[in-house]
Image (tube, rainbow, N blue to C red; front, side, top):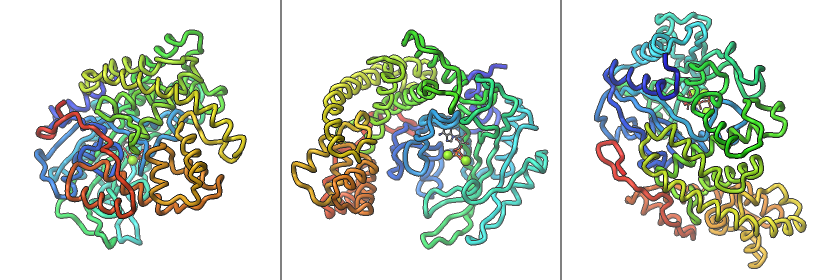
Length: 511
Ligand code: ATP
Ligand code: MG
Ligand code: MG
Ligand code: MG
């Protein structure tokens, strides 16, 4: 049977849509179009949030899709481990099915089990499932129903494991819809590792699918109430599923990434090829660089194709720009390619994903143009910034570990403080450091320590949260209210961060 990522994705959709009467909903853009609380869409459920909150009624009771997801900030920030492990990416595809008050736990588990074991033919003996074991403080009972369901489906008792709040209870936020979940993990011992030994970064047991049962609502005062009807919300990482089906220990050893590695090696003549090792075995970091570059290029392509634009005065798209600059610096420092590598790799991302996410194919030229422009800008900023920064670091050795190549704004920020004899970082000045100069919270705190100026971390955080929200909102009364509060804090909100290049029609996005 066909085990390519394309076939695996399609089989998932066919199974739910054709065989089990779900309705197909296109992936939303990774830009959170209708959710001001996240910087990027980070799960399949984001576009259905209104349904769980009760503000939107579902057009279909059963829905399935494959959603483009980005996890580089907020609650799910996987950026720091990208490249160091084989299963977390900044960008990934989440396959999901939903029941908006139609079927519940029993059918959700049965559907998932049948797909994995009958359709994908994964050996039952390699699967583990988990269930929620309750929380006394919150008065939540163990999800024995879920445990029983798995047993009745035929899962061996010793492979049904209980876990607590952290792993098996899902909440949207401090209040709102929530509920227990059950996760399906695969024992990957026996899978082939291209490096022929198990090492840091690849795990024996890997979570592939998370099934959430939204059955409670948490009130503002913390108490939890049963909802009249339960919802099912599931998400399975396509890259991890492909690794399992292609019998590889790391997602990077699947057809979603290998063609990119081959391309990198071909374009940058003379470098060793990708061999899949992690940790200490990757003695010069080249293998990790391969993974980071491929991962980041996929993320950039997805974001840029969805209309996100890295702008000078945009705190959210600063993340996008940082990731872009990381990709440029890896191209140069690890692969010796001064320009054009990232832009070239975009073609391979589009070749692999453009058929599914047509916006990538449609906007490929624009994506390549923006990358070109950003690379040029980065190079020119960098050459001057690096020289100036090295002088500054001689005066202020405490600043030595800040990455000026990824944050060229450090130089101007430093000068601003010195020239204007800044004695205290007020909330509006710290916002300027963040928004205009592109510094992150860590850099702001280091600067203030090194220069011995006071700053209020809490105040900064409040200002940043407010302004992040404002910039992600579509015009509304709520937005006006936030802008007013910002102005009271003497912070001038910047222009909208995201330029929406699409309109919304019946739950799909058209460019
Ligand atoms: P993990 O515990 O491995 O970090 P998670 O519990 O944070 O995963 P969920 O929020 O449950 O993940 O998301 C559903 C599924 O999406 C996961 O079971 C996994 O297959 C996939 N997934 C989550 N995060 C990533 C990521 N950063 N890269 C690739 N796939 C991911
Ligand atoms: Mg996670
Ligand atoms: Mg998990
Ligand atoms: Mg999970």
